[in-house]
Image (tube, rainbow, N blue to C red; front, side, top):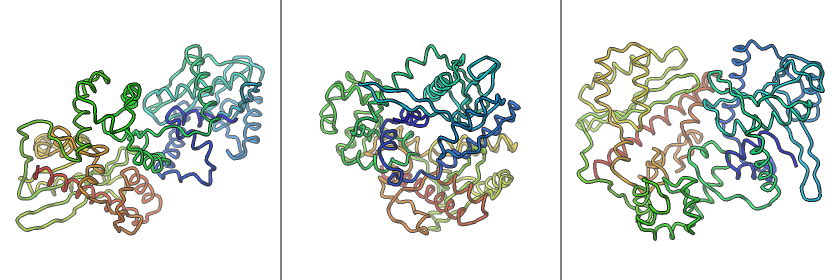
Length: 487
C-alpha cells in the first residue's frame, strides 16, 4: 500500500476525498478545477520567492513525477553528493508488513531538502525537509505532513532531524516538535491504512468552504441531496453533527421533531435558537423573521448595484461593476470599470468615483463586507480625500447583512449563489456562449482563472466571461433587494 504526503494531506482535509482518489481509477475521476491548477502555479512562484529570500542555491532532479523510481534514485544521489539544497525531490521508504498488517511504501515530496552539518549515513552531513505552503497560518495538516516528511527522511539517512520544518505565506518559518507530533502521525497512518483497506465509502459531509474547490463536490453534493443530509443545513458544523448523531438524530425528520430546548441541551451552544429557526424554515419551506419592527431597506429613484472581481494573489481589484436602475425612466444598464492590465487599477478607481458622483442621492447596494473593505483599501492606496470616502461609505447598503440580521431562509447557505437560486435567479454560463442552462456552476474562483488567462493570452473572450459573471452578480443583488422590499 502506497502512502504519499499528498494522500496524508487529503485525508486530514477530507477522508472521503482520500478514499475516492485512492480507489477510483484516474481516468474515471472528475477533472480537477482550473483554480486548483492556478494554486499549484502560485505555489511554484512563491517557492521561487522563498529561494531568493533565503538566498538558496539549489539543484532540481531531472526525472518527472511520473518516473517515481528514477526520481527517488536521483534525489538520493544528490543527497549522497552533499549538494546544498534540492528542490522538488522525492524519497521513498518501505515498511514491511506482518501477518496482521499490510506493508507500506512511504513516498514524500518535500519542496526543499536542505543540507546541515550533522553526520548521518550519507557522510559528514544530513538533510532537513522544508515544505512550502500557500496558507497564511500553520494549519495542523501542514504540521502532520512536515512530521511525515521528517520521519521518512530520518529513516533514509539514519538521523532524525531536530524538527520538521515548513514555510507559510510572508516567509513565516515554522518548526514542529517530533516528540509531540510523531505519536499522532502513527495514529493517522493507522487510520489511513484502515480507510484504504476497506471498500466502504466514508460518509458525505458538505463543508461549504472546504468543499467548494474539490473535484468530487458535485458527486458528494448529489448524494447529500438524495440523503437530505444534515450537513446541508446552515449552522450544522462537523462538531454539532457528531453531537446530534450521538443522540440518535441522524436524519432531517428526527431533527425537526426536536424542541428548541432539547436542541440547546444537545448542542450546548448559544446559536441553537438560530439553528432551530433554520430547521423550521427548511421544514416549512418559507422565510422566518428573526425580529419584529424590521427597518425598511433604503431606496432611491436611481439605485446602483455594485460588485467587485479581484485577483487576491496580486492584491488587485480589476473590475468594479455596476447595474444602474432608474425607476422613473424604467431604465436598467450595466456599467463596468475594468483594469485590462495590472497598472490600471488606479484609473478604474478614479473612473468609478467619477461615475457614482453623478448620482449623489443614489444608494449603492452590494453583497457582503468585501466591497466596503475594498473601497477603503483603494481610497487609502490612491489617496482619496477623507470626506469623499466617508460620503461614499454612507451610501453603501449591505444586502447580505440585512438578510442575515433579519431573516432565516430555506437555503443551503447564505451566499449570493444560494440566495439567488432560492429566488429562481440563474447565472448565465459563459462556457456555453452566455446561454442559461439553469446551472450555477461558475464562481468567483473561475473569474480569477479567466483573468490570468486574459493576461497570458490577450484573448478578450476571457474578459467577456468575467463581465457576464459580474453583471449577473449585480442582477442577483438587485433581485435580493426586491425580495426584501416585498417582505
